[in-house]
Image 1 (tube, rainbow, N blue to C red):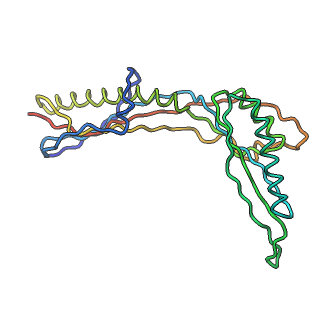
Image 2 (cartoon, rainbow, N blue to C red):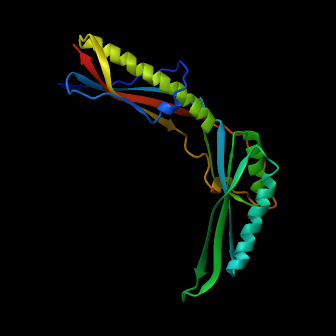
Image 3 (cartoon, rainbow, N blue to C red):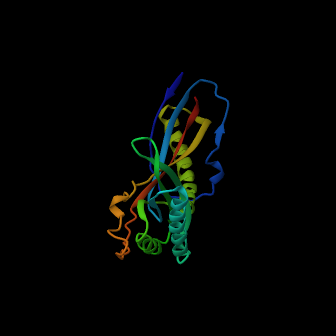
Length: 238
């Protein structure tokens, strides 16, 4: 006889070093008798400590060479400005170039766009860099999340919590079904994150003019929820 039991629990205590268990599972050969399958979940809400942004330059020219010169010059200047902020990681993003046609399908010019991506846990420096770059570039998106280092440390803790929750629920079910003991048939640990949506779109962050000085902005990073689930099957011993 096979039965199914689902249960979600929340724990936020304990520490661990089970990173290697993230993709693994415990396994025993099932017999198909007196088995219960269920799930436990632990979660914790944490403050976002990383900001990511993407900024771009769009231009038009009568020929591809002139367009490339304009775009490359703009991005090169942006990278020079970014070097003033060593705590911000800056990388070149996507670049697109396409022709413009007249009504007779003749090429009359070129349009292109190139971008850079920013990432940092230093909110103040990133805000000021964005303000500096907005005099020549346009903001495409801005969002917040949990850095890899912080997320990995929390997931290790939550994997231990999820494992303990699974074992505790297994004991509870063993008593509920009047069994003497249980053994684990299989169990899997899975991680998940719930991040907020991007904070701004391109038009919200565009500078009014190239001559205008853009003030830096105070960031409110918000929170994210990190979770780990343990799901598996136990076999009861009557």
